[in-house]
Length: 129
Image 1 (cartoon, rainbow, N blue to C red):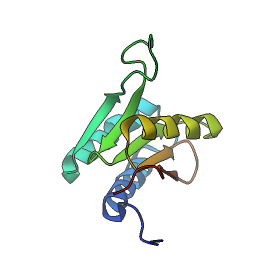
Image 2: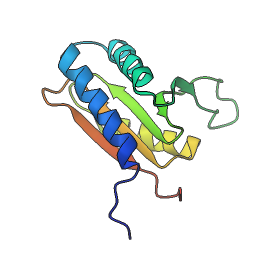
Image 3: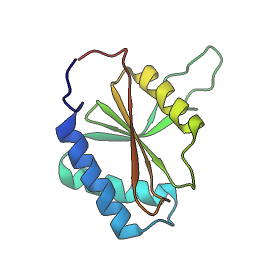
Image 4: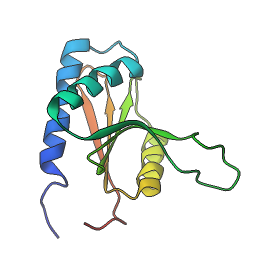
């Protein structure tokens, strides 16, 4: 089993962007404001990304476009932005569903409301690279 960090170089760049945004905006903005700032910095960094990527329906009859991820970066990492007191189990399960739907290996959940920026890494073990 490898001890190497999954997508370490890309994750490092993303983390730098997230910490810069947190330092600039503080902890009391809304998710869209954080996303706007992150998008600007992603564009400046040269990382390829999609914002508010629509996921395919997860069951027959589900309305198209119901589920969106905040960012898909380099077609490898899902980035979910939160601005709330506590990131809970439902946020974790939501990210797990997104990982399965897009068949990618890594999701990051970041909560900007915390005094210290909190970034959770969630791995999809069913994807091999």
